[in-house]
Length: 265
Ligand code: HEM
Image 1 (tube, helix red, strand yellow):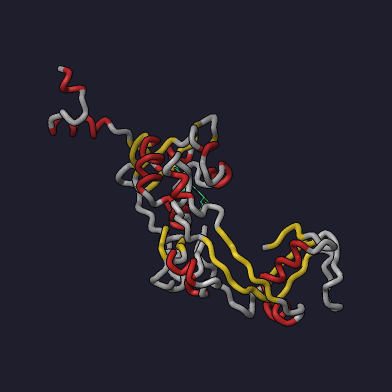
Image 2: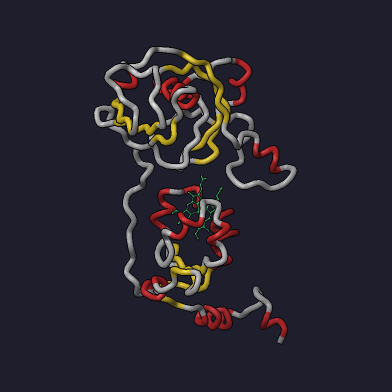
């Protein structure tokens, strides 16, 4: 009798019976669950999940995950492909499964891969995640060359690389006060809209040699002591370069005592 209750010891007939007990839902049923009071449900592929208790602890924030409440998470995960990892799907999502979509629900096809336009990267980079692309500078280079070659700079992305037309590009920068370094024909009292030419031509040219490091660099080492969230970076999420123009523009904006940057996008 006991053997009938133990998973793994079920006969195939019993397994079919258990499968039959699985709950089936329509998309309309799922759509009714998008508040903490009614429960928050989402679908992923043909699975239905009750994520009510998970929403507030979602590492990407409650506001973001709530965009999918009552609907499909698939299109969001196509963009945030860091979710397509067994750690997320098996350990976090699967325990919240409450049923399956009715098999007669029409299949929905998602748009093309949002990462299709990402540039080709140097094969020597040490890839930690393919989409979004996150990779380390090869460790051997870190000691051999003070400046990191451009193609081998570590790469940190949360999203696809945006496709930007240099002619259409505008940088909006909102400031609290105006600064003395601005050229006479530019006013920064409120929101400035700069073309790429503006940034490249209208500012004094300076170079800064700077080392940048991802906040998660060496996280893999921490994991050997206690588990941490996020990508398992080794020691190569750090690189050095001589920067000019754009970066200098940002540094000047951010650190100019007479000009404090409140928002850029
Ligand atoms: C049941 C649904 C979801 C689950 C179980 C889930 C789970 C997770 C987990 C475990 C992480 C941490 C991943 C890591 O650090 O490697 C994460 C991060 C994140 N999630 Fe979700 N998520 C869900 C839905 C969503 C939705 C619908 C969105 C967007 C609308 C979203 C956006 C994000 C973002 C932006 C991050 C941070 C990524 C980063 O820092 O690179 N998630 N989520």
